Amino acid sequence: MSVNKISSLKNMDQYKIWDVMSYAWTEIGLESEDYPKYAKKIKQDYPDWEKVNKIIVRDVCASFAVDSFLIFPCMLWMIMPDWCYDEEYLKARMKKWYAKPYWSHFINPIRILGYPISIIFTLGVRRKLKKAYENT
Image 1: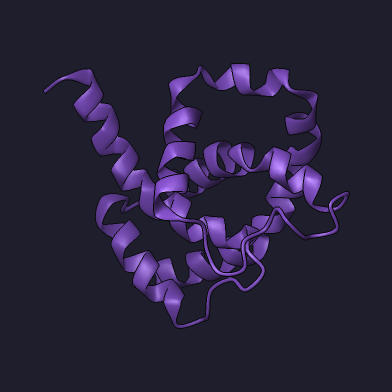
Image 2: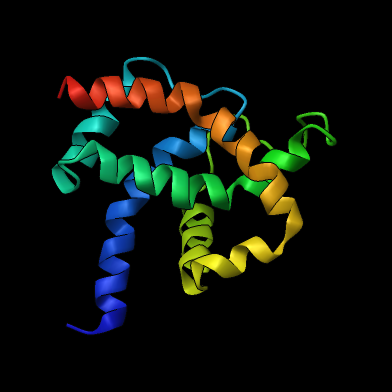
């Protein structure tokens, strides 16, 4: 199997995590009954919560760090979608994220400033997802 195919398969598994976590940056978010469905799908590929959490903190939060930093100056409008991120947009974002070495993303000082904000944005979603994950 080629490296590109392995990489894209890995990213497809991770897409489930990126998808649920992207709701932290929407105005509406998920309903409580949605978390068990996402947790079940994620647990099929990632039986260890620590691995899931690592992807969330290391990749998803870091990817959305610039958005997180800009949300307050833009007063929560024009950046955050109402319901969810488009699947194609989110997949393209993942592809762009994983195409570069991890360290290179942090050359941008806005990403460094936005990263702690991004972590805070995800606290509620991570807590609910973890609870659903543990109950699956």
